[in-house]
Amino acid sequence: MRVSRDAADIRMAAVCDLPAVTMEKIAGILHCDVQDMFVRYYGLNHLGFFDRIIVDGKDKTGEVLTKCDELGLDIDPDLIRMLGVIPLPTLRMYYNPEEVIKGQAGPTRGSVLASAEEQMMACLKAGDYGRLEEYYAKRDTSWYKIMVKLIGALSGIQPGYFFLNGINNGLLDFLPDEAIVEVNCYVDKNGIHPIHIGKVNDMVKPLIAAINEYEERTQKAILNKDRQGMVKALMIHPEIRDYGLAKKIVRKVAPK
Image (cartoon, rainbow, N blue to C red; front, side, top):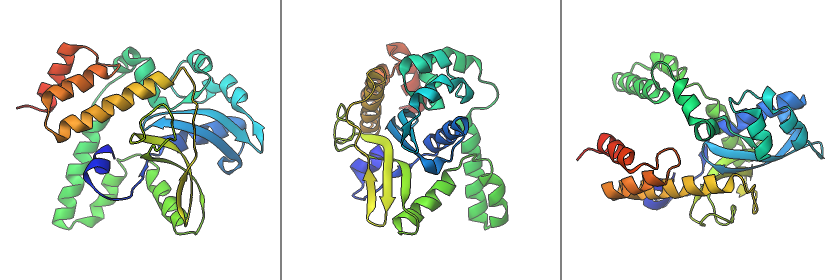
């Protein structure tokens, strides 16, 4: 979406199902319906946090933190309670990278999806539409359903709250206005209305800021075919940092 922001003059928002799936897990341990919940959520795509959970007007954040081991996030519950926020499960890649690497087996998720995409494109070119559903099933996600509901909300059929990515414009006051952030939004026939966040948890702010800077520098370097800029961006990323490793990655993904 960062590239679209800079390269295309269109109004857009992006959808990810992970916050909604995590919210459903939270509803499960609270034994309530998602529709009865209001949450404060903020961050970047695949790097978001819930820091307030309200059910029927009552703050249930403390209860969720107490029971966070029941969420199945693959993140140490003691760490979650120390942070004081509920992270998306993808945050394990930042908090426990070595454990994530050790647990990897078989083909990567990216390679599986790339293969499915190639097969789907081949079906489309051949007009073999009957096999498409088989390949769609390999994209295990619920954001298709969320997209349908989002279109319905924008059409005025059923307004509601959605986790969306859009231009910051002060939503997170520690990031540049042009940053792309992920927040809870109310959506109706009049459009998308992001919920202003302002102050965030001090324990997660540095990570959000660092990854935002990495993503901004990366997309600009790619658009400008700036290999040195790519290396600089990778050196900001907390999982890379190393100059030699950054050069190796750039040589692999962007050969001369």
